[in-house]
Amino acid sequence: MVEHRMIDVNGIRLHIAEEGQGPLVVLLHGFPESWHSWQHQFGPLAAAGFRVVAPDQRGYGRSDHPDDVDAYSILHLVGDVVGLIHALGEEKAYVVGHDWGAPVAWHTALLRPDVVLGVAGLSVPPPFRGTEPPLGAMDRMFGGRFYWNYFNRPGVADAEFAKDPRTTLRKFFYIASGDAPTAAEGRQPLVEHGRGWLETMSDPEVLPEWFTEADLDVLTDSFSRGFTGALNWYRNIDRNWELTAAWHQAVVSVPALYVYGDRDLVPAFPGTPELIASLPDLMPSLRREPIRLKGCGHWTQQERPAEVNAALVDFLTELRG
Image (cartoon, rainbow, N blue to C red; front, side, top):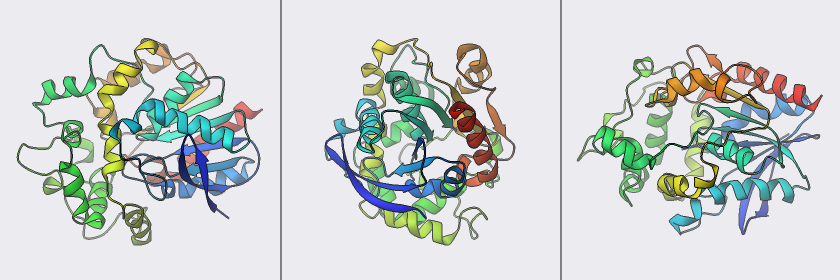
């Protein structure tokens, strides 16, 4: 049974869901998600002999939502993970992340390899810091239309998404899934000037089989406090680039696993296909070549739970020995 509680971490309170006993595995969700995104992983990982903990990360769900935009930098997010591991009475843990949770997991391994036994990222590949601030690069490349730039405008996306959170989430989860007709086209997620992002998204009459109305109920409730905390993560993208200058050209050294869908929009971002192809050469710590899930969209562990669970259990049990 998954149990829930609040825990004090890094100066804030985090809501966590947990199940099982054994070596600690921390599961980190992305945008716009919650601990519930890992519902299919708790049972299999616990059955494999692991203690599984998934927090609502800061700015999400029942966890604290700091008002200050600067409180959502990558250093704060990594600090939350390290603090959570220690608050749970452990010195080390395995860390797994999806979407935004993946950069947090990768950076936890990069910045604090002493506390990470192994790291797995879903959708978003390991970080290789570029030579210029990312928001500026995307602004130049797409004329300010890339969704990161749209999210960076204070209050704009916040208001659009909060008008009808259930519809916002339904559209997001469908359009980025492998079930959407346009998922395989590799188009960039652009927001035209003077328009909102949701205007261009299809609203499905029927949800995909893997995403039920009950799932949507839980997710909608988790955004009852709005989307600003979650969007503040994007408003720190360039600041994160500045804060991680000391790790420029550094490579994740702990044992690693990367899994992604071939219909996911993120691996099609500019420069990402080339990065993924080069990962086996760039990262000696990868335990196997990137795992590419056919027909899978962005919501990796929800769309393909059996394949993701098998990959994670194999990876974690191999490391545990």
